[in-house]
Length: 143
Image (cartoon, rainbow, N blue to C red; front, side):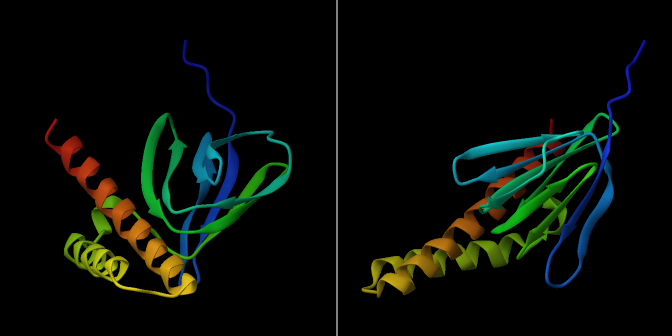
């Protein structure tokens, strides 16, 4: 006998579009202190999201996506995620991510202000997260 997991409403929004809207069993994201999981009936809260991956569990299946920095608001029965960018692995432009990684690594070798250094590190983190997720997705296809 299969038990149905309790669901809640999740929306993931970027400045350009609604990335995801649906009812989910669980949602995981990267926070400054590590991974956070949100299940149905979670206490309301607001938390920052850092560059990395997020995971959505819907109908007993996990789906993973790249996300950049943002934050999450959890309410009774719903959660809303606001991030700068979000992409499914199959939509990641690997060539563009590789070029971004190379540019960021080159800029890190140059003398920069503290502000420029932080921006460069953020760009490098975004490109590395995209590449890591894309590679994982490719490996899953061949298994």
